[in-house]
Image 1 (cartoon, rainbow, N blue to C red):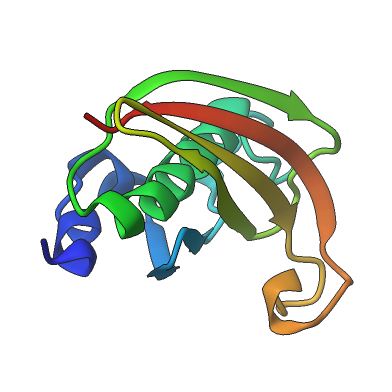
Image 2: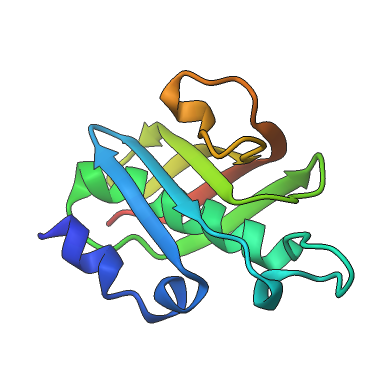
Length: 138
């Protein structure tokens, strides 16, 4: 399976501008450039919760796809919003369990405060959400 082509061809993720930047060995990273269209506040750029959720779900699925090399439909996802996402968003996901029927992935989402992503060794991003996704693997 061509993982890069799979995520580039995902219509909803493309509509939001989600870019999966890394996807291998049960780990994935992705980003999303914030725009007025993705904000819930007309006076200030603040990511709508659904945008943050979709980034977490997409990057979480990518981490699992890197192991099973097939699409993994979401069974359930829980997300805790910790802060407002006021900049471009960045997510990191790691597989916790990859079973024959179900996989579990933890995802952290950050708002980039200075144009540098936390995944680049820079700790300046604001941690805006924790998520745990459960996906169908078999």
